[in-house]
Amino acid sequence: MKSEQTFSMRRIPACRCIWLPGVILLLSTATGWAQAGGASTAAGQDLSGPRTSKALPGPTADQLAKLESVYKDIHANPELSMQEQRTARMAADWLRQQGYEVTEKIGGTGVVGLLRNGEGATVLLRADMDALPMKENTGLPYASTKTGKDPSGVDTAIAHSCGHDMHVTWLMGATQILAQNRDKWRGTVMAVFQPAEETGEGARAMVEDGMVKRFPKPDITLAQHVMSLPAGRSPYGAAPCCPCRIVGK
Image 1 (cartoon, one colour):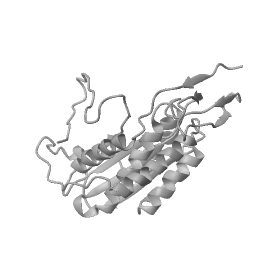
Image 2 (image 1 turned 180 degrees about the vertical axis):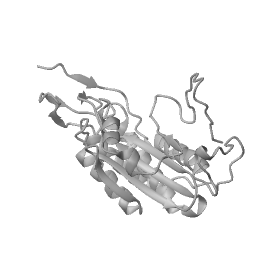
Image 3 (image 1 turned 120 degrees about the horizontal axis):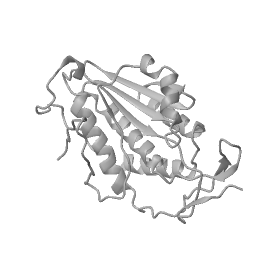
């Protein structure tokens, strides 16, 4: 029998303190690019100058309450890599409710939502959806008790022990706020919910299914990852070949 890993990491009960900076970080960075008059980097525009996009509001109390409910639902119902049928449906339904053009089943379970809002940059926002073949032992009221079969057909417990439940929730919140505030930015938002990050299959499957040909070429691609750091801090390391511009207050 396959050995089973156990997930016992402490989750912060007040998850809203994580969602808020996560959603705001995505929004502030995205609108720094998809701004009024924003042009493609391919056009050679100098992007080092100040931005003129209007500030977006953060999530309201009602939005945070809804996101908390969504997060707990996804956390309690994890799905293994390339099996993210339920999570993908949730993401697609959410995007449609916000007015996005939605394409499903890209590379299996991948979802892409487009929100076109005039001339400007195309910003790709990405979240991964899959969970891990592990048993959760957090004791949370919404802890996962799900089981399933791994690719080899072996029964296994399943848990969101790498934060992808949080990633999906953040992106859902960001897409809603961007849709509700179209007067404050211009461009195109491309929301991508990717399967199978843990196994490395999902991105390849989406590309092989023609994603780069079927959708606009992004000027910038943004993702995010929950980490055990205090709110408001971001880790960084040396990347000599990758210039970086950090936007914040």
